[in-house]
Image (cartoon, rainbow, N blue to C red; front, side, top):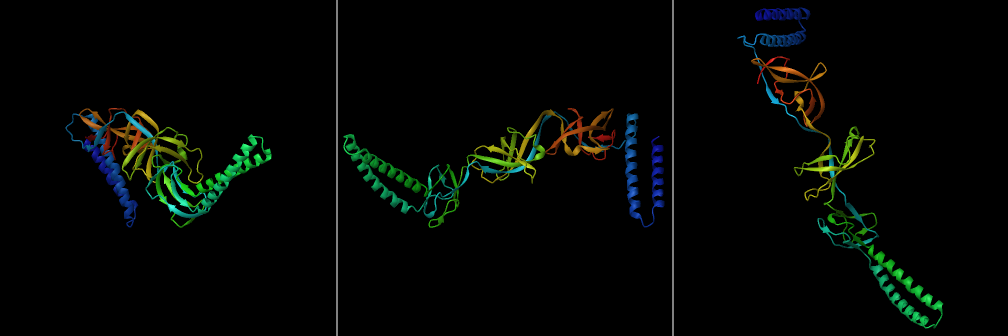
Amino acid sequence: MKSTIYTRLTVIAIAGVLAACSAATPDDKKAQLEQLKKQEKDISKQIQQLESEIAQENPDSTTVVKSKEVTVAELALRKFDHYVKTQGSVDAEDNILVSAKSPGVVTAVYIKEGQQVSKGQVLAQIDNSVIIRSIEAQKSQLELAKTVFERQKNLWDQKIGTEVQYLQAKTNKESLEKQLESLNEQNDMTRIKAPISGTVDDVAIKIGENIAPGMPAVRVVNTSDLKLIANVSEAYVTAIKKGNSAVISIPELKKEITAKVTFVGKTIDPLSRTFPVEIKLPADGDLRPNMTGILKVIFHTEPSTIVVPVNVVQELNKEKIVFVAETNGKQTVARKRVVTVEGVYDNLAQVNGLKAGEKIITFGYQGLNDGQVIKI
């Protein structure tokens, strides 16, 4: 029977070759070659199918059926995360560019880059010589006004003098006190102070330079309070929520950080069609602002499901299929399983249509037919 089948296939092949040669012009050798290759492929498939059928009908036959070597893996239920992956950058919650509050010439710089400073510490001094002289003169006037007021008050307590004299002395003293307080505030504005505790990241001023409010003077960064900022496609706007688990990979440090999403933006950028997310980072002395981080936000987790390598999922006749190894008598054959793919992440696919314990074919699955004899 087998020889009859092969004879028929040979005849078909010869007829196909003759038909191809007669149909094509002598110059159209490329078209002839493509047609012959196609016929060879079809015939090979038919031979494989017939060999499988013969093996199934007569498993005890001594006829040797050519089998294809494959590699298999046994399926087991496992946890599988659905996530969105994007790139972000490390930023400091407190990353402040300090400027002067009053204009003038810088007379002293008390810090250097990399130095630790405390909140309120004086970083630099602007020329305040004129204000100091005004303060000294004001103090002298205030001392006189206080003396006059005390004497006038003593006289008024003894019912000597007029009330107007007492009130004038009191008003003069209080006015001078307020003027002195104002001068002290102006003097304090000539000192550039650290608004936060942290590290001096940049010193942009030098002694002798003119500075004005708004001009950058010193940058102070608090590296103990960092976050990662990233933008996520609007396709995930309903999936990403505050509190989602996140895994951050810092390539420069070769480390991974597990954290939670602490902020999800409500506005979509009209140009990039993305929305911002922020993840508060744990204190780490190696982290620096503007470092690049690869962010994975996990928005759904399947606690127990079937997962296969995505490359073993093939498409045939608009169906997703996977081949599994199945014992048939004394032989092992490939069986086609139609599956549905629920998600693909990290080259792994979550699928429905397979069961734990089945052995999927992970190598040699290309070109297999349903029922074809295989060798593991």
